[in-house]
Image 1: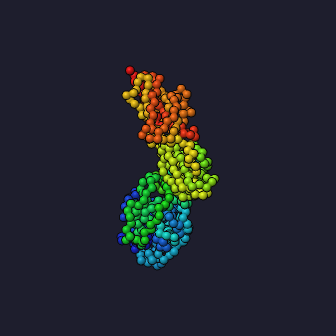
Image 2: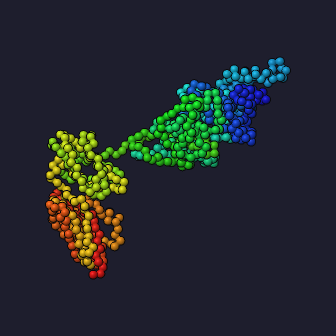
Image 3: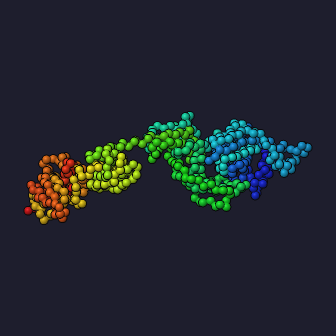
Amino acid sequence: MVLLHWCLLWLLFPLSSRTQKLPTRDEELFQMQIRDKAFFHDSSVIPDGAEISSYLFRDTPKRYFFVVEEDNTPLSVTVTPCDAPLEWKLSLQELPEDTSGEGSGDLEPLEQQKQQIINEEGTELFSYKGNDVEYFISSSSPSGLYQLDLLSTEKDTHFKVYATTTPESDQPYPELPYDPRVDVTSLGRTTVTLAWKPSPTASLLKQPIQYCVVINKEHNFKSLCAVEAKLSADDAFMMAPKPGLDFSPFDFAHFGFPSDNSGKERSFQAKPSPKLGRHVYSRPKVDIQKICIGNKNIFTVSDLKPDTQYYFDVFVVNINSNMSTAYVGTFARTKEEAKQKTVELKDGKVTDVFVKRKGAKFLRFAPVSSHQKVTFFIHSCLDAVQIQVRRDGKLLLSQNVEGIQQFQLRGKPKAKYLIRLKGNKKGASMLKILATTRPTKQSFPSLPEDTRIKAFDKLRTCSSATVAWLGTQERNKFCIYKKEVDDNYNEDQKRREQNQCLGPDIRKKSEKVLCKYFHSQNLQKAVTTETIKGLQPGKSYLLDVYVIGHGGHSVKYQSKVVKTRKFC
């Protein structure tokens, strides 16, 4: 055994500025060693029972050593590629005999022993090429110096290595259930529900674990290490060490490995200096999301895009060791968005349209005859809506509409018009729309700019109220209605009744006051007054005025609440 330690020390002498002690599995000594980062700095020794993280330059091999001190020792070596496939192999070195050829008992010169180890290729035990998390395990291994050689032929990358001589007691990687698949249990246009069987690590071994769900559009991931590499790709890839100079495998912060278990996406804090190492890779932002959800084994992913394929991975993470195991991922395509039904508009006919909150409706108008102009009449019954009109794909109009508005556009032979109506954030929208190539046949009544009803306070009595409203130059029919309301009738209640498209036909006959015609060529004189009689003292009344057009379509003025005098 003494010779084994001497050989390894001389083998590693050129890689370090000072002689280092070998890590052992004496637990107290081991804990002291991993706290001392300087112990592992520039080291090619894999500590027993601790996961290290390291870096590979493309086409530049790297070699590590691991000591097994006694024969018939269990051995497990796990290599986790991150971001790129790896080629790696594990070999057992043939060490010199304990005595020299003359049997003198003296050790061979140390320089010769060192050279002998370096020159010997050793016995290959295992080799692998790919990006899977792969491992070598043996229940009974001979003592000796084990050599791990790694190579990346695609690009500069990083990786993790874990080696132990006590695999049964360590169990740092969480176990997977007998069925390690991730299942899609529900599929929608923007949501996918995932479920998986729980890890035995939590139920049997009573170790704290959490599950992390990863969603992306490219492919499934085989390790959480690869996910972390992708999540960090929106900044410089990493600060690559100078060629020939290793780094502390426990100083994970340099390589974007967080010390906590939160599920937030992370990026590297410091921009790498161009002076460090080789070329620094700058990558485009990646569309990937990582969400850690605790120990639940069902999760609904939301805010997805319809008709899009997504890949889903689940990783179980040992909270104590921060080491993880991947379930068998899955993929699914979200359902298609429900196709918008396009409503056909007929020339000169009013169409009722309902638009959901923040929703949209599409209408199509294709005049059957040639036309020089086309006129659109829009009556927004509640809140404002946005209208867009395209003729043969070209945008002609984009505007918000409140109340009644009309738009006249230049026509074109055999033109087709596509109208898009978009609701607002406040609530659903109701509107009436009319498209015509003969605008003289007006179906909507004309309205004044001010559609308020004015009440005259000085003319109020205990049984009557006098109001006035504006008209237009066009002769129209006006009907006024009244309804008794509570004294606490407020603006919110009044707003709910402001649907201007609801006509007088829905009102009770007892609420009708009268109907009359009026107009004036002089707009300043286009005003009418009316005294509403038969009211009760000290009561509040909701007053509505409807203007009815030639086509029978009506528009309601803004409602007005008046209160009669209590004492006269």
